[in-house]
Length: 186
Image (cartoon, rainbow, N blue to C red):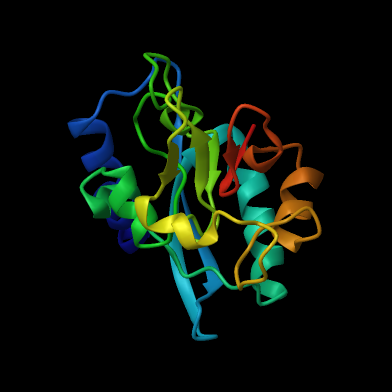
């Protein structure tokens, strides 16, 4: 029991003590097994809103059972709470206290209600007002063209997509104003 309590403390305290949290948000720490890109079993850590903890536990158990590849699952605090660094490392994560890009409104990630899966291969793509393409992570440009075949791509036929839909999540890849292929939220 002490080992688990120590693990919870090491991940939650840096997040709550160094970053603000919206009122009423209760975070949970999940230990989830996953298969990395080398086919090896890894133990991942997700910080999420307690309201979606059961859903995420069930989804990641199914992904693990199916040997669905996820490169890494680490708390955003391991990347200095820097979303871009985390995405460039292809890190799957949930809680990240931040605003929606270009807005003063808090992101669903700041509430622990959104998760980004294999973000390097499933970038967020938005056309700016000046016509320029904004790709996040910035290293995700090779994966913007979704008609190309490549590994780790989330599509509507993908197991990851289907599991999140079965649990009532919305997929950013279906949005009209931008395409956030890595993003699932409740």
